[in-house]
Image (tube, rainbow, N blue to C red; front, side):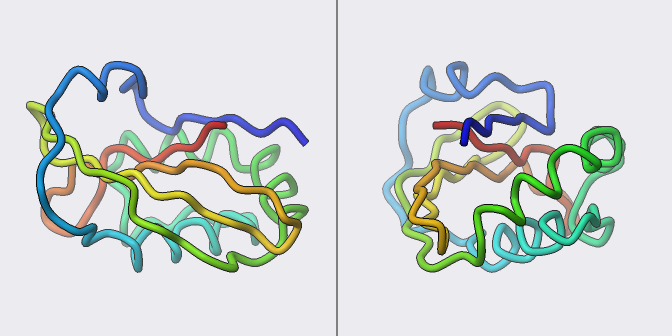
Length: 121
């Protein structure tokens, strides 16, 4: 299954232009909740800044069934963190029950809400 999405206006390639920060990931619980809710057809307003929430709501009809088909998250492994002008963005390798592994990113957190969440590959 080909599944690529970006819920915010930040290109993943642009994130690579910033040096990685030496630390472990902090956003795995939030990313897990966002993916789980999206697989059920819901955008998690409690964790999404308004522009991200609007983008999610615009894509959820197609995104939800795709995520549900992947199955439950089996493992989530921190890959890296990049510092961007708008805040840290973390990347995780997420393995689903279907056997598919994808890289997901989450970040640019302000007041408990994220501006960037997406997947690809």
